[in-house]
Image 1: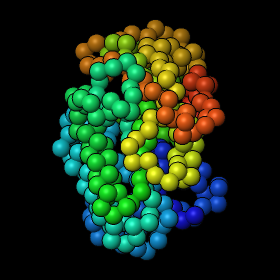
Image 2: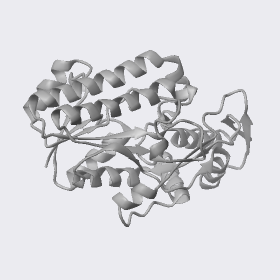
Image 3: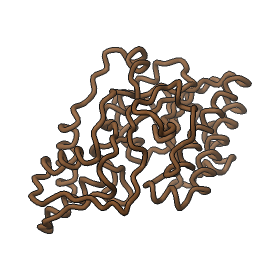
Amino acid sequence: MKILLLGSTGFIGSNLKTRLEKEGHTIFTAERSSGVDIRRYNDIRFTIKYTKPDVIYNLASHGGSVHYVRNNSADVFQDNVLMAINLYKAISEVNKDIKVIQPFSNCSYPGKSDVQYEEEWLDGDVHPSVFSFGNSKRTIFYLSKCYKQQYGIRSVNILFPNTYGPGDSLDPNHTHALNGMIIRMLEAQKKGDEEFVVWGTGSPIREWAYIDDFIEVLVRCLEIEGQEYPVNMGQEKGYSIAESAGLIKRACKFKGKITFDTKYRDGDPVKIVSGEKFKQLFKDFEFFDHYQGIKNTVKYYKEKK
């Protein structure tokens, strides 16, 4: 199968590229580093026309930490929506049979319930801390629905929780939350610090997706004809930030004390997603053990450092 992978240099994209190549697919990429900017319509249109893909993975995204997203809200929203508009418009003009597979972060849920059900996804405002990023993903969903209605373009949209695992950035300021905590704790251990500071109260509960699980879901999406309304990648099990910090401390063998800096605002109090529809769509799926995933990630960063 010929696949165009947008966002191939990121944490998720690079892992997905490796997996798809192992399975024998022909992979094309389009990145700014090679002169392709999909915020420019002609760039993505030419790329699709030239590569002639059967499927496009849309992992291209402008995002970052809660603090980054809040301080760059207009740019984040505009870039994400503009890239999606250009993508769908180009598909409608070049080949309407191309299928789009794209993940949406579960930060796009309204922050009002302990367990997030797909039926409630659009039933309320996105949390203010990720207002622009979360709403950009909702807008992309509406876009995919409109292009399905007018042009018959198929999309498979998946809602996923916080991701972690080997292969992410070595910079704690440009990595996913759990990975960033692991990097900082390893640095604290190396310096012999007696204290490790976690930003916020440590009480928010998060569901974490190990990278291998996420990649497996994205690969299985190749077999799905279309799923415009997003389905949760849900295992219905969460850990507080404090609990995960404790597991990281154990895996790192950090001897110091964990403290919490409450001047940093917490995000949503709970982000656990329902897995009922996921189990129907991805039968017999087994999730990776959370602590083992942390141990694997600690090992990766120890080797890289």
